[in-house]
Image (cartoon, rainbow, N blue to C red; front, side, top):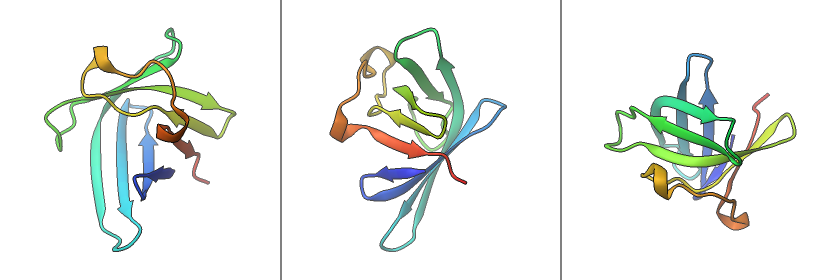
Length: 101
């Protein structure tokens, strides 16, 4: 879990290659959920992450991932096109997530 544009972000990855992103508004408690199928390519540096088949959107999401220790990851901003995905991390635009306990 982490923060994204003033909302609490809970990102759940499952072993069946599906994921759920929950955005919780801190002011009114409203929740927006995106779910889809994810692919991570560990042979690339940085590691690429693609989320496809998202029913709530008409396009996939692409980014890169950096593992920070065993309990945290950093995601660069998302792109709607694989070729336009980020290739590095920008400090103030990255999404930092910590493993929920």
